[in-house]
Amino acid sequence: MPKLVRLCLLALLPLTFFGTFSYGAQPLDDLKGPIDEVIRILRDPRYQDKAGRELQREKMWNIIQEVFDFTEMAKRTLARNWKKFTPAQRKEFSELFAEFLGNNYIDKIQGGYQEEQVVYLGQKMVTAKRAVVKTKILRESLEIPVAYSMVLRGGVWRVYDVNIEGVSLVKNYRTQFRKALMRKSPAQLIEILRKKIERQKKARATRDDRAGGAADALSNRCQFKEG
Amino acid sequence: MKKSIWIFVFMGFFVVAGTRGLATGAEPGQGKNTGAVPMSIAAGAGVVEERYMDDNLGYLDEEGEEEIQVPDPLADWNLVWFKFNDFFYLKIVEPVAKGYRAVMPVPARTAVKNFFHNLTTPIRFVNCILQWKGEEAGNEFNRFLINSTLGILGFLDVAKKWGNIDPADEDLGQTLGVWGLDNGFYIVWPFIGPCTARDTIGRVGDFFLDPVTYVDPLLLYAGIKSYDVVNRTSFRIGDYQRFKDAAIDPYVAVRDAYIQYREKEVRE
Image 1 (tube, rainbow over the protein chains, first blue to last red):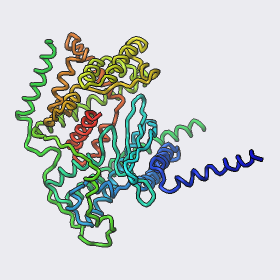
Image 2 (cartoon, each protein chain N blue to C red; image 1 turned 180 degrees about the vertical axis):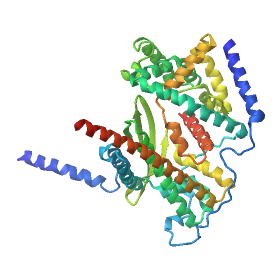
Image 3 (cartoon, rainbow over the protein chains, first blue to last red; image 1 turned 135 degrees about the vertical axis):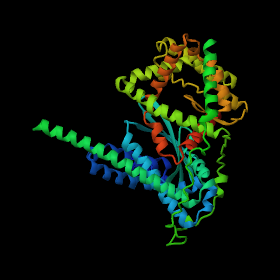
Image 4 (cartoon, rainbow over the protein chains, first blue to last red; image 1 turned 90 degrees about the vertical axis):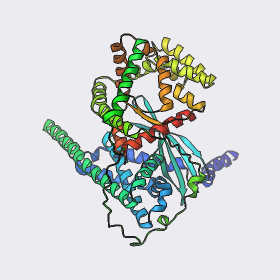
């Protein structure tokens, strides 16, 4: 009989565990889940051809948008210059900056994935609502430390800065934007960003054509062999 | 010693060549003001969410995000060499490293990387001592002993693999930083790349602690150094291009990344 009681208690144990941690999810989990999902989509052979790559981008973008707080990033990169922007300009800038960063991120992994692995090293709470999740990327015999600064908002942890080998992405853009805004108006900076995105699109189109062509050639060859 | 003189003469040549003639009056990394202001941004158009109305930036100060600004008085000169290095790296170093990577398997390249890293132990060892880091100095010493013997001349990093002894990433530039010497100003050296006044002094000092420096003749020295660079680059194919693609102003982006990176190293 005591054995049964103990078993019942054991069965209840996970529940108490769940109870203590269910509110306020852990920053590491909120980061790891989506990133692993992005890598899974990236490695999925279904998205090899040109049309597939477009779909792949879309799927990855949907996940990335949830994990990264691009508005917060935009605000932090502009810092004091944020006040020079009208609310409408802030919105436009934030949206363009999000697209620009998202494109960079996706282009990076879609165009040059070298079988890197992500290792999650742990999380450090800075305050109750801010945390840093430390990871490292393993490529061949190289280790690249990557830390994500995250903020808790509405019960979800989202990324507002990425630090690669000691270089903060937000600070890096802040320096660039500050320099640009010394001579240019917010509207001009927005225009620069828009042109950058146009260029990204063009570069991607040529790359996708090439990749798509290679994939088609490969499948043709395979069919030929099978025949 | 003769060789080191040659290298300084060589560097001196670039200094002169850079300041004379080659430098243009253009502002680094910035095109001329286009003056094109898009009229699409009509103020107050539509409904703007609350978060875009928020003017509060106080939390940025509270977080104590200290920012390091390093003066760039040689910006024009630096930009010339930035462009030169950019071309040199993307058109020569990386293509060579790419070909090398295609024929050399990862274990071989890792072994070469380890070998060169082991060879520069004196730099890290001396600077650990100069920074009063006894434990790290001991680690460097042990690593050198273990890897040079059991690790077959340093080709295998057995100290890390079996003993989990991490290398100490120290150099003279960091030592000077720890001692309180300021960065001074930013400077881009041909072939070497981003640097500061302080790190230039550091590099010169480290140069004399590097055993490869004492290889004669000069051509052999250059060959060894080039091979080291190519081998290291083989692990970094495409990284620089991607970093550049993500930049609004590549010159400023590289400068800031260098300063941030070095600042972190000095802190550690």
